[in-house]
Length: 441
Image (cartoon, rainbow, N blue to C red):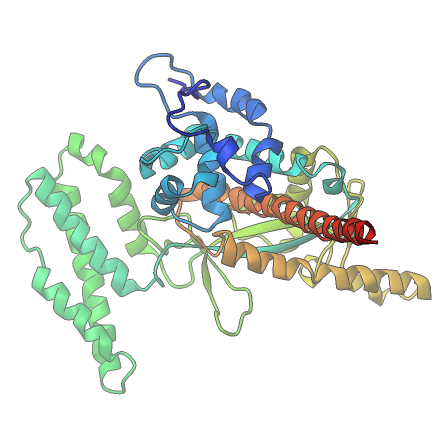
C-alpha cells in the first residue's frame, strides 16, 4: 500500500524547519529544485496493492537513497544521520524536526527491490534533467572500470571449507545423519594452509586442499542421496552451485568465484598493484565540458571495451533523449570508427596519414580532454560507493552504478549553488562597503 506525506503538521512552541534553517544552505535550495511530484507519480506505479500497512512516503525513501550515496553512508548510517540532521529531514519533505528514525534500515532494501532497475533509472534521468541544456552536449567521453563485489579473494580452500559447513547445516535442518561431519578434520586442513608460502609447507598445503575438495564432494553426494524429493527441491539451487564449483577446472570459462555471488567474474585491467579484480564491468559516459554523467551502465558479461559502445550509446539516448555526435575513447576501444550517427575517436586516429595539421591538433586536444574522465571515475569510487558494491546480485550492480552517477550529478548542482552564493556574497559586500564610503563623504 502506498504511503503519504502529512501536509498540515501541527507546530508546537516553535516554527517549522522552513523558518528555522538557513535558506543559503545548498541542500535547502536543492530540495526546491527537484521535481518530487513527478517522481512520486512515476514511482507510484510500483505500489499495486491497496491494502495492508501503509508504506513510507516515496519522497522520504528516494531522498534517503540519494543522501546515502551522496555522503557515502551505509543504510544503517543514513537512517541514523537523518534523525540528527535537520537539513536531511527538510530535504526529505518534513516540516517539523523529528527525533526518531524515519524507518528501519531494511526498508531501503525493500524499496530498492520494489522499484527495481527501471525505478532507479527514472531517478538517474531526473538528476540529468536538472542540469538542462548543459547535459545535452554533442561530445561525450566514454570509459570502463570495474565495480568490485563485496567478496574475499577467492581460493579453493575457502570455498571448500564453506561447502563443508553449509552441507552440515543443511543436514541438521533436514534431520539427516551424516557418516561424518569432518568438523575437526577440515579445521586442521585449513590450518595447514598457512605454510603455503614456505618451502616445506607448500607441499602439505596443496595436499590439504586436495583433501578438502574430496571431503566437500563426498558430503554433497551423500546429501544428494539422502534428501527426499520434496526437500531436495528446497536446496536444489545451493547443491547445483556446489556441484558446479567442484567440477570446474582451471582452464574453464564462467567459473564460480563466490558461492553467494555466482554472477561475479574475474577482470584483468593490467594494474600493477591489483592484477585481478572480481566484480562486474561498468561503462561511464560523461559530457566533455560540464562533466555531467549521462550514462552509467553495468555489463553482465566481461566484454571487450569496443563491443560495449553500442549498449552505452543506446543507454545515453534513452536517458537524456539525444544521441551524441562524437564519443571520445581510449585505445581499448580501437576497431570502432562509427556507430549510427556517432563518430568514435580514439588515439588510433592520429596514425592516419591524410590528416592535416589542424585536424591532428583538434584530435590531440580531444584526446587530452578524454583523460578528465579518469579522476571522475576515481571520485565515483572513493566518494560515491562505486569502489565496492554491497548490494546483492546483478540487480544490485545495476542499481549501485546508477545511484553513484545520480549522486555525482546532484553534487554538481550543490557546487553550483555554493559558487553562486559565494559570488553573491563577494559582490554584495563590495557594494555595501561602497555605499558606506559614499555616506561618510
